[in-house]
Length: 363
Image (cartoon, rainbow, N blue to C red; front, top):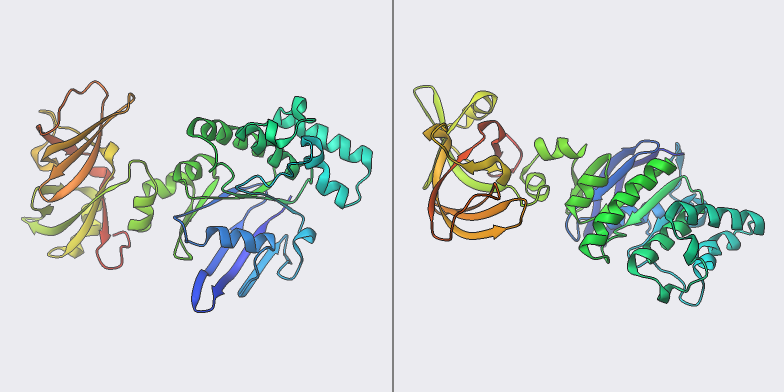
């Protein structure tokens, strides 16, 4: 298969930088996901790898070979687009075979490759249909099949599931992961959906404003975010943030504001102590908040007023007001509470995150 390296990669449109100084080493057979909000540079990066976008500066290498000046057809890659890009007048078979025919492959080899890909994707019975006769999920499989028959070194995916409904997206995520495990091909996948990124990626690259914010395994990024942006982008519901002042009294460290007074413990306190007297941003995920019981120390909780109750079946999300701060707490589905009720929430002290208010870097 192939290793892909992006070295000091830049793309600017006049004075606007779409991608800035991206350095990334993608391992052989790795499934790597570029994720971020619209305009973060992830699709532009993918298009530069594909050869569909020129490079302002930097290098792209596949197996140590610089491909900056190679045309797309000579890069030995296959790309799956967001809109499927199927020829409406051709059958499924002809859509999958078209690229091979253009490359003058033998007819028997084309037939073998198409049948093999169709069997992998479970679309053998659809080969004579036209795209208009297919569902969204079936069209997506055809687009995947057209890429598979190429036997490329690298697969590129540009938000391929964004046009599917929620249930089908979940199904196709599972199938994509199985497909990658079966093919063992290096894959670069672009999405704005952090759930797709977390479930599909061997590693995840979080981007913002053309810059790479953090690279790592999904749970590494989730549990140890490098900055506030990564912490807030990964996770659903998103991490709660509150501006607090760090205060030290009798050797004990407190994070407090109007409504919150939390004792900071362990290694977190050690890292935060140098910020005593300063304002910092405290982060806590909704699943790390729970209804306080008699066993929860008072210094590890705070009072709140319920503003919204979202009953999701497997959990209940409580939108609560804590002083001047709004938070979301995820509680057990058997909890019976109502809007405007007062309650006390307790935290998991080992799951507190603190960020510098200016640089937003984790403390």
